[in-house]
Image 1 (cartoon, rainbow, N blue to C red):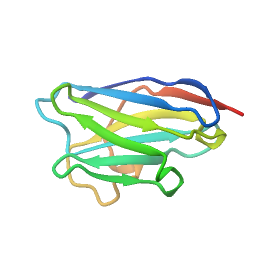
Image 2: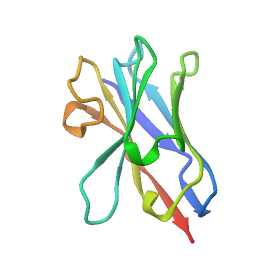
Image 3: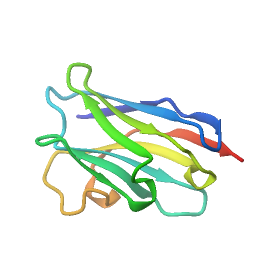
Length: 125
């Protein structure tokens, strides 16, 4: 059973940065796909960034390309999301997710079977 625990959320001013951390436990290996998703009040959960463990190939939603970077630390079994140049549109609860099998759409929440509890990101103007 894969368990995910997020941390690193908080409140920053527009233009600031935050780094989210997701600690992966309960599995001897990194799941095949690891991703970051976000959900703002009244909106559907949105895929932000994902990583294919076998190749480290990243996937990003267009709205965060050039601002967010997904990465992992194999030794620490940790997934990161470095978020720079934050804007108010980035305000949301951010979730870490994992999938053990190949998925057709790495940024689709429906493809992931394991989820963390989430960490809140707030950006003020």
